[in-house]
Length: 120
Image (cartoon, rainbow, N blue to C red; front, side):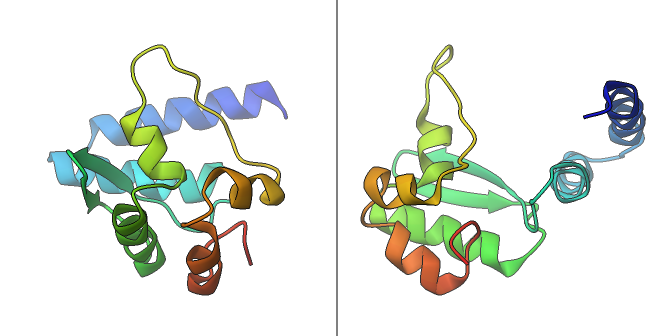
């Protein structure tokens, strides 16, 4: 990774976020930036968790909403777990697809059927 390029992209993103005139606009810009700046990210959104219920904000694709609803139904999955984490807990990036089936056995098979990456 070229850190100078990355720093420039982050500065541009910060300016873009400051230019938004609403919270929704800011969330949409964050989701859009994820698909632009994160290698391998084809769809993104912001998931919030209220108890055991999820709400998807600023999804870039219907797949995000479908995956979030699946995670709510199964009460497991990568975004569901990230939303439940407590301050100071480790956050990780999934690079080994085989670990998904072991970590989220109820979520992984139907997520694969949805076409959720990195399953497809």
